[in-house]
Length: 186
Figure (cartoon, rainbow, N blue to C red):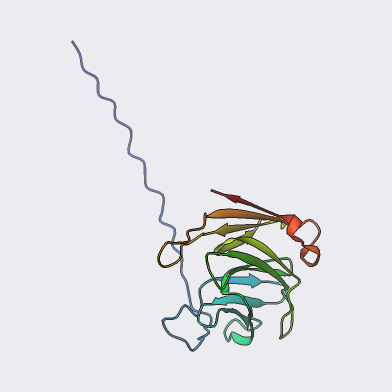
């Protein structure tokens, strides 16, 4: 009887890649511990940063033309809605996931021109599932994908299904209708 033990030759570890980050600039919303800067999206064409501001339920629009000194241009407010939860930008279009005042009811995906002026009027607004919590454009910009959390109310007497909404952008944001939205519960 014989034994055989095979061993792999030692492999040199790849050199560790390091990443050095340096602060270029900062912006303070003036609000502490209230979710005043939750989700951000950058539009390279306008050098604007769109920031979900949980404290005012809107979207702060910052000017980044001088990255060392970001400055607030204005806020996009969403009257009649519960507040923005997420933002995304693609080729000059800003999309916002906006919950309903009653978070158990269907929310909305609201679209704006990224270069809009204050007050920033929506290009379109379409219904999605309950409590839209995140949205993103597909890399080609053809679709907007929305994750709808479907969170229950405080006493669980209303507990909507979570869902996914897919918004077809083929006709452009200004021509969106409810027919361009598909929502599937899961």
